Image (cartoon, rainbow, N blue to C red; front, side, top):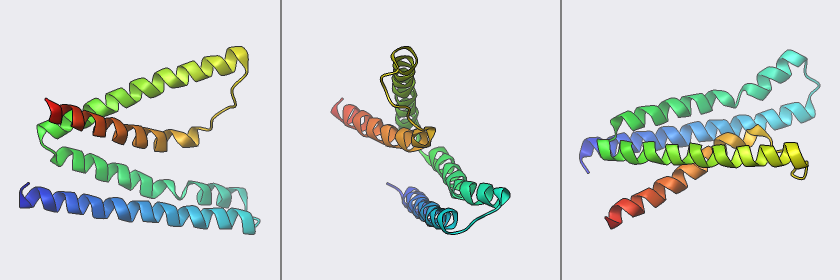
Length: 135
């Protein structure tokens, strides 16, 4: 790995940690503010969506990092996202049909969508890297 790539990865990891830390900090502030204070509706909305801001900066950081990758790594990450979207799409359709037709499954909040996409993409990425290493 070249020094430029190492610097890019270090910067990405630093930004990633910073944005996740800001997100978690704002999540704590949000939780306490909503529990302890009787806020006006506009303040509740502002406090509730505040943790989204660092997530948007995190997405920007991920896109910048993706653009710095070589073609092979871009291919692996792109394929992992395609697998993730396909698996989650099929799973959500199946779950939704079971919920609609049979009513036997509990509803799942969309708050779990982004963490699930991130986790599954990382898992599929790991599997694909092992696959390509074996070729």
